[in-house]
Image 1 (cartoon, protein in one colour):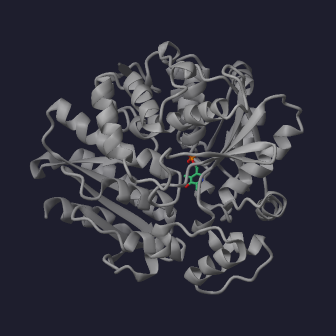
Image 2 (cartoon, helix red, strand yellow):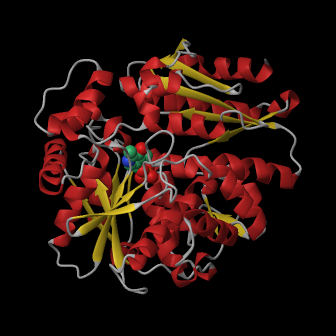
Length: 490
Ligand SMILES: *Cc1c(COP(=O)(O)O)cnc(C)c1O
């Protein structure tokens, strides 16, 4: 299958799209004709998560046969998740919660980052590429650990993660600096997340001008701009839908809506792919925190990144430039890439753009948007726990709050809320939401939360405290390129 850039008529096959990550013109890859890519949920009804993943991913990346893909999926997921069905859906009150955090790092990014390394290494083999693929990632916490967990000890790859010193939670830091694996590097930078992100972007740009293949290396990214990271996320929309059918909660063909806690727009875009491919999706509800740039955009058509950046209690959604929105605009503009290139140029140079009425109307057919404050986030955690005995994390709580607002618009369909992290990943906020006073030691707070609620601590988080620290490098923020080159040459 061919993939096409969102900014020009540049096309590549799916293997190249997975390996390159981003198109040479700066655009993102999309299937040339998404509307011709179909998977009928009725055909998946009695399949397991892994079987569904094999069908869906083979359909999107048909350079791999279905049996090759089935084997790849088994390697990616087999035995790595707490629950055999990978992404279980549970009923909470009138609604359903799709739990995406049962993987090795307790955040939803595990679902995609378990699969991406396998896709990259197999694409590399099929294309006959010999060089080692070096993954560079800047992280504000969750992506780095999930990428490390996905890529550690994967032959033919290496991974370097940069995180802001003092800018991640104690739990997140411990998760990263204790990472084992012979091909992993974790390094703190003296600066904030934006410094780390800028340093990594500049390193990609500088390395593009050098020939790293002389060292037997190519750089790549584990960021959600890679189509190989986006595609595995489609699977759980189908899985959750089929689970509701199997439980008799809906009939096959009934429309449902999904409420998605959103940052980079990757997760919710996977839901849009599912809808295009034939899943009966009524609405996709985009839930944001105080960084409400998407709420404004989906309401007014104006995207303006020139606004105050809020550090919130749902930090993985603290983002002002949602990269994957570009793909959505391209699809809603029916492939008018010149228009998209224009919007992206304006965003870069001026900091804002406004889409035309037709495009906004197209978006509004599918998307509903809402946001909530940090206090409302905590209130949603408290309310959900007191009313239903269900403990959710801060990111999920944003979706819970926005789901309630959406339901006031009187939709008739069932609502599935995507839960993107374990409450134990953000224990200080969650315990505070239950009216308790958290201890200063974050590991102790996990115990407090466990004592208060009885909800088990995920095993990988529970024994973090005992693990050996393996990575202690701290570098100035302008040394990222040098650091990477040393690793590449070394
Ligand atoms: C990354 C992340 C999100 C946002 O997902 P996007 O695909 O970037 O929109 C939400 N919640 C958690 C816990 C995350 O780690």
